[in-house]
Image (cartoon, rainbow, N blue to C red; front, side, top):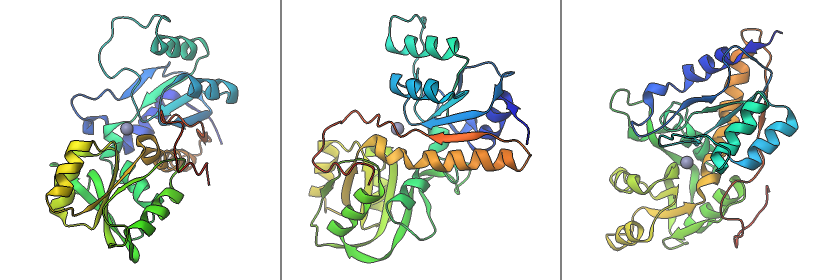
Length: 278
Ligand SMILES: [Zn+2]
């Protein structure tokens, strides 16, 4: 087994998460790092925040792959006078690269919502909730089935148990039977209409706001809604991305060690359904 350069790791990531698939407003790809430097250890995390940098430095990572961008909008300064600037300084000072796969990972096949669907117990084949125009096998969200019908409340319990530390909020009668499920990792307000049109029994996503959710429930309350924490809905993807990277490189005789960050970077630190890592 040999080691490889950051450029080779990036090429492998981009073979799976093509930057061209990212939304126009997004900022994906290499944030910092020298493409010529070797990469032996890769840390996967949802957020590029200080505690994740702490974890990377402690472990001796050469690269951090995050789902969320550090800078989503342009900046004219990376001075260490802001938390983002401090992240950049600490990474560069320690030769740690940072790479982001965001909306291009959302729409990939498999992507962020495939991992979420499996984590909450969907066992059937999955298809995009909102297929991409250029390739309907890719797209936002996923639709699938549970192994058997069950009450909404039971499904919410299964989903909570399958996700890391999260608080679930449920809209709909907990006794209502559900079987077809749509999921979308991250903020899913914009997919409410698609979930309704798909005729699924329940839609699980994050960051649902009061007014869209209220209007949806008043307009016929189908599908039922489950709102989880944003971080928790995207965390399951990390293992999928890490597994892909290490096995794709191993197939070429390259040994890279991957680690999934277990630092909880959910901003909501106190919840009434705190199940730990369960
Ligand atoms: Zn997100």
